[in-house]
Image (cartoon, rainbow, N blue to C red; front, side, top):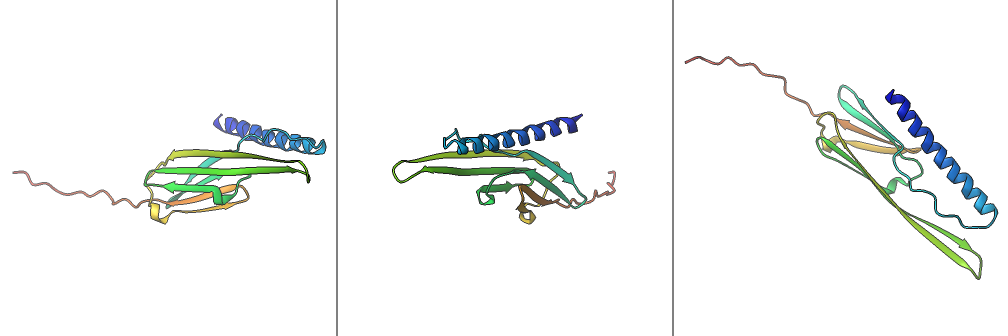
Length: 148
């Protein structure tokens, strides 16, 4: 049932983006300036627990990866994005500039301890992928205790 909820959220976000693009094109055709489109964010996050590492995939469409910041500790991950969008329109006599600042933060508690120094991240076609190597745990030791 959880899969159905995730699917609905993803589909609604996709529909929202598509409608925003459609209205933007219509406004452009009539040479009018609409309100700036709604702010973006993370569409979905999945964490795959592998034997040696955690693999996190976050779908974050329509952003410049230079605006992303990823911070990690042994048991927490923070994804932060801050960007400025500017739109300029006009001709030789009339000019109009609109600016919007978008920001979001997503903090996650990780399901196992990791080695932060060995973590790596990449962003490609709207998907942020983070590899988090798991911390090795010492096997349980057993010792005999002398009875006095």
